Length: 472
Image (cartoon, rainbow, N blue to C red; front, top):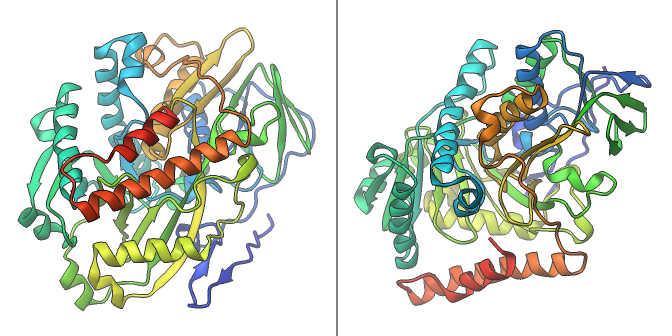
């Protein structure tokens, strides 16, 4: 296997930029597996070797070990969002629950939410069984509110979750002093603690899962670019894989397939990670556990304290590139690095003493209605799963199990879930989708500024306008 060469660039301040992600920099980029050696027959062909494709293959092979399962990957397994995300194994479900309930009813959505929570433990179980050390610690997630409008949204969130079946132990309102006891977030007025979340090092998890799929008999071919998916085949630059079942598991890279450019929009998300924290900084910040940290801003952020005692924080940079183009090596714009660094220092002032070690970015898949989807068409044998809108680390597991059951035509409760078989209209042609996405995030950022500066006690109308424009 050849070694992957990823030229990295350092900013003027010495920050490593790109190189896929810090998660890979910390463990080393993998060596390439071999490319597809030519035309090949299979029982199931999976396009994309990220978490969705790997989880699907894992459960297919454990349910039917004699299956010939082939995964095709342009780069290496876990190259995309699977190895670049914020490391949140959370129970967050993308999209409007009301949209899911409109076709399947309230109780079906409650069941989907329950299964999302249990999927966190399922991922942990598989990691334990397969001997994958991915720094998984289930210490929950803390969302903070830092102005009155955010605090109102926090209270509304608690009522909303209870309306969808959340038990008292699933949510805990925290006063400012209780937040400081956990993490010294500057200006935090209130918090919402949810126990259903675990920290993970995503590159370790996806690398271990790929190895587990191979041990189960799956074949992963890398350096193989799929250009077109048809009923019964996937066409690549290395040959054609013929299979009665072909599953598209590309998430943010879906637009690379012929005819799918407007199916899911590749939304960009960026991250920075600090150097290891000193004892002095740690004493000022607190954060003794492994809980994740989020907020109630519209242009939201997500953070974790890593197992090697750094802080990794992410948010939106340039949210979308014209024509559904995607970054390939994670290189992040200096302005985005500055914005995320400033946000980190604003939230945790003690981090101003700590250098930023690396920045990177990646893309996630966004359907037009912002709701995750799992689908399989029996007559053609074509299926897909994705559209997680940034909440995919846990969702990929449940989606992969669901897609495996659909492909095997198993009559399981998973195939009846409300995200199965949904039809969503495509995104608008350019330049409308570029203008719409950039307008949305400009409005969200302006709404955050207005809520901060004016200390509004309600959500800014600018954010409501952004929601209306985009259909969120």
